Length: 304
Image 1 (spheres, helix red, strand yellow):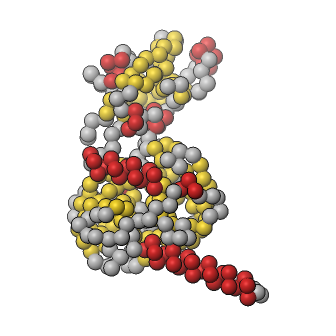
Image 2 (cartoon, helix red, strand yellow):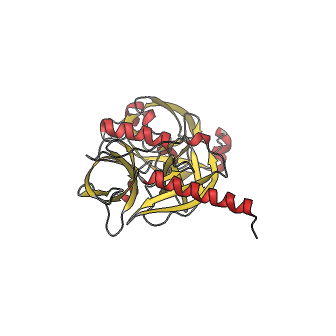
């Protein structure tokens, strides 16, 4: 049986968690941009809602359900699938998120995931893992790896992860890592939001080549002292693209970019973030059994 001191401690914790949910609930909205189920979003800046891009299935006729249960129209400003973020614009005046710097987190810290559907919902857990900056499979830069040990219920993607003071650590998503829910930290969100508000899109690096993974013969690996098992073979070179201008040819095998081995197309995309646009990247290429280095000026991927 719990002692009176233990009961008081648990009761105080329970009240603190409920207070954190209440405080953060004022910035949590429901985003109605897909059939059958809404997702969640956070009123990040005045008039700006951030949500998970993979839950926004249409570009128009989007509405947002506010904390007072009113439905209002929202305009899609831009989206970035590589970081799974979408930005919506509102005409309403609402409280804005109080931000917690994810770099202050420790494994074991108590956190809450919030979502909004018919009302506010919460899921309770702890920070289970922290890590350094990482790249998503489509090349997006996430400033810190944050994995909570809690359940994201249907509709929770796009909603906030908050600390026990109700401050927003970031946005929860099930759309960036297979079989794992992660958090997009506030620093990443701020960077993406600023660029989407300024330009409506995120610039992506572009070489102008078609590629396929290829395994390298052991004899060639040994001869050229290559650490990776394979590379990517160039199967198409776009006319007047960055690669053609640098002298890249069909049949070349790309094995490294700026000294980092690449063995599939995902590795290449991960090296072509928006910060690379306009800069030169050194490509190590196997041509005719010989290793050569080619400097490619990274272009910006054309709009589809």
